[in-house]
Length: 193
Image 1 (spheres, rainbow, N blue to C red):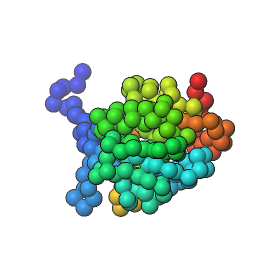
Image 2: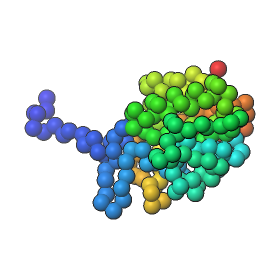
Image 3: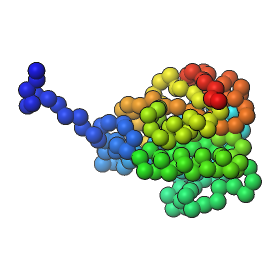
């Protein structure tokens, strides 16, 4: 049995769990809500859903890669905006802090169930035990279980090291065959019922 003095305590700043803040560097401000999706994956999203009409949790810098027709950032606040007048396509990499991911997933699902979203792709951590993950799973048409951890990018475009979680792409729409063909290159794709 180990003595209490020899046990190491995990440093929560170094853990990549939802809501944890990645280790800070003075020259690069980061937080758990600023994980930029690499262009390789955005290209796959476009191959599946076509042009992205809305990225609801984004920034001007992130939209240089996403190239959505519209995006909401911290100042425009997706929770206070009308997403669509008709139908639209959505890519969502939600903020990962616990309270914001719960609310953002709820908001996405509300728009999906109201028929405002024609197709959508949601990228999240594979936190299968959470209510928000189960809610996405219940409504999705298909999912891709990515076969490696995504090296997200930070504000300066460099890969963020230390991602300790795997990721999942959720697809919402009727083109599950196209989603399967495109995303099966990066992981197992399962159709949902």
